[in-house]
Image (tube, rainbow, N blue to C red; front, side, top):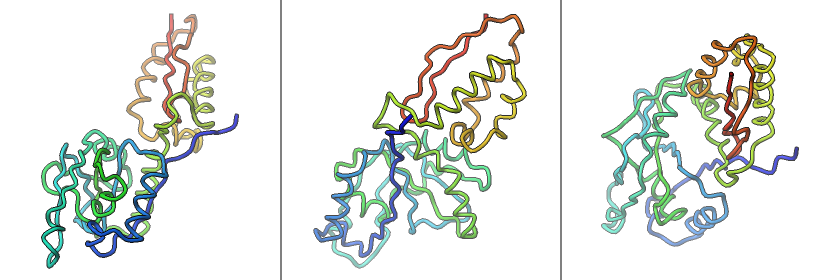
Length: 245
């Protein structure tokens, strides 16, 4: 099956002079065009150079404040507010996903610094997309930063622009799971972490999968097995249900 969906883009943006937040120039115009040309995200995770911490933290407040972390600029720059909402649920999900390095939740201290809002104010001037920031742990090695990014790859996989379609690998995993259930191959279902890269994409964290193990633990050889809501939506979200009777 041809894969007609796409991953959400990832951007590395040099914000430059903080005055770019209120200027109209070739850089700010490029950011504006980007915001209009890429698929509209459901939420934005920003990793700003201006939030270095001992440990890794993710903003988890519902309304992050606009931080003016600079000095010596015109009052107009300090008057800029970027009132985007936060997304505590997403922040908590990312925190729970981390295996190699822990990521704590910051519910009160930080917000959105100019490394984030000076760009977003041009990309999404209505501030109508939730934004969270993740800090840079100054004690992590470059490889640890790289590996932490790899743990978050699943964030690109939910295709909000295609609610009724699924990635090839999501369909493949869904079919393999149904086959294992039908064949009473419980060991394969229990050892889902050892089933290959497609399973790591489909099940980045286990909390939505583990309840299935209770179903197969109750499975009897004489049970009639049926599946319902047998669809993949938003690229990677399986709606498939299982009934034993």
